[in-house]
Amino acid sequence: MAGIHITDIEAAINHWRAKNPSPDGVTLPRELRALAEVYALMVFHKQDLADEFTLPREAAEAFQDWYATTPDTPCIAICSTSQGDESCKGCGRTFEEVQLWTEMSAGEKRAVWRRITLEGTSWRFNKYAERAAEDRQQTKAAAEAQTLLPL
Image (cartoon, rainbow, N blue to C red; front, top):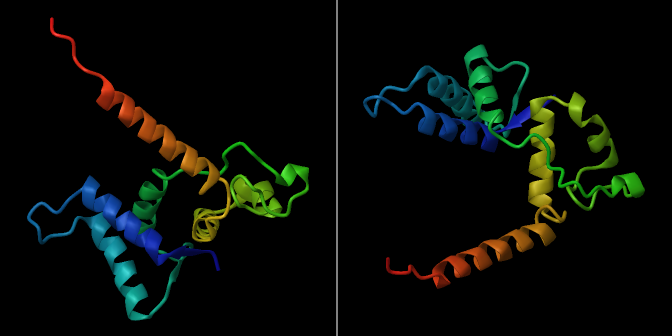
């Protein structure tokens, strides 16, 4: 079963809360109502995954709208599977996941994203994440050091 994890349903709900908030604080727009129903049933049945192919149409459309805002691939253009590694050091995907990525469903892709995020061992999450944080700190320090010249 290709599944959508409950945390992705939560993210889609939050996406719609920001995109189309309740007009009166009580009434839910149809996209939120559809996702909330799926979420409630998952909680009630103590399930972490919802079958992406049997979601109600409105919930599936609302999920797809959120999914379109997420990065498609975890690739950081440093692929070690082409050099024979079982898992890519850059993104954390297996050789098979890299090869089949374009054929995977949204649920399958999100499952891979979830696994590599939880593992957090690929360069996407450590080596290059640290470098990006350092760059942000340097940029902030440089901006704070600048002073305005009087005109």
